[in-house]
Length: 260
Image: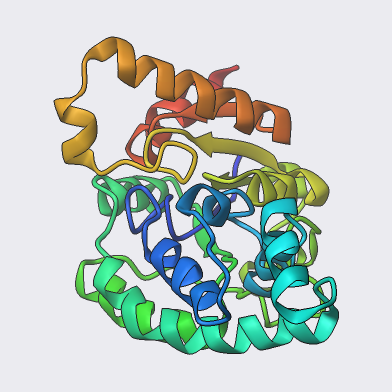
C-alpha cells in the first residue's frame, strides 16, 4: 500500500508566482497610503501568514510601529490593523492574477501524484476573494486542485492546523502522517507540522529567495547555493522534514520516501 494519500500545496511561491511577488508591492503601497514607509524586506518577513495577521506583524515591527506612533500619536491598535487590511485586500485582488503563472513543473508533478492515487489539496494565506481571481488563471494552465482552504474560511489560519484539518475532511484522507504539506514559508510549514503531516519545504521558488527563474539562471552557482542554503535553514527551523528546490522535485522525493 502506498505511504501517502494526499499532498496539500501552498499557492504563491509554491505552485504559482515563482518568487512570491504579488503581495510585495501591494503591502508597501498600502502602508504608504497611511504615510508609512515599509520596505519589501519588511513586507516579505511575515509571508505565509493569513493576510490580516501579516498586516499585524508588520505593524508590530519597530521601524513601522515607530512611524505609526509619530504620525498618529499612538502605537498601532487592532483598529489600525483592520484599516490597513481593508486597503490591502482590494489592491491585492486587482493585481494577483497578473502573478498567477504556474511554477514550472507544477502540472507534471500533480499528474505524477494523481497517477499514484494521491489527492491534491491546497491551503493559502490569501483570502477567498483574492483566490477567486487566481483559480481561473491556474485552471487555464492545467492546475485545479481537489480543494482550497483560504485564510478567511476558518476562525484561525496559519500557523495553526485548522486549514489542514479541513483538507483532511474535504479530501477524506487520514491519518495525518499519510498527507504531505508542501510550502515555501515558515507559517505554511508550521501549519503542516501542527497537523501532524510530513512537511516539504520548497526553497528556490519561494518567498525566502524572492527571485524569478530568469534571475536565478543568470546567477553564479555559488550565489544560487547561498540562497538555497539560507532558505533551507529557514524551512528546517520551521519544521520541514525535507527541502527541495521546487515542486518539480517532489516526485523524486516521493520515490525515495516510498521505499524508505
